[in-house]
Image (tube, rainbow, N blue to C red; front, top):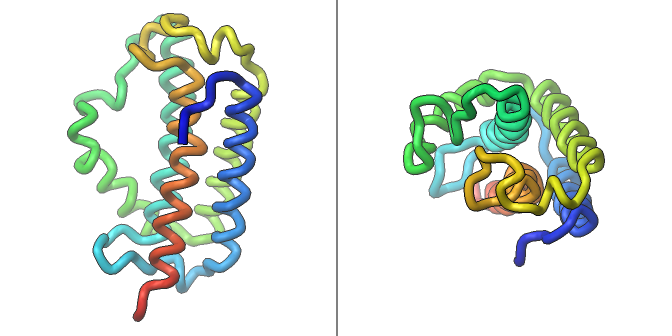
Length: 166
């Protein structure tokens, strides 16, 4: 699926992919939220905690950049090829959190990210170099990675997990 190139495309893909994920999440309760796919130990709870965290990371990067502080992408002390180690505690914390709380936090993060996108102009979202911390990507591409791309992969993982024989 090609990346969005403007705010309206980004919002359309955000809404579409979030709706699909939310539909899948209606099949998940506290008990099934502890399931994981046969080939991966990460639980459904862990997946939702992870996605929630990364939406928040985008806001931290943005706020640090706008404030003139150093921006650590992906995180202080980590490189992109070290995300497995970075993400492990996120999954573990998710496993310890009640499902209703995870969903509430996820919904709030989705609302915040969507509002963030709505409040930006195409120029800020899709012009390279507007924010130094984004490197070769645009702010819009980061927002898509934190939102719709993560919604799609979460939906696939959760559907696979729910369909797996027990």
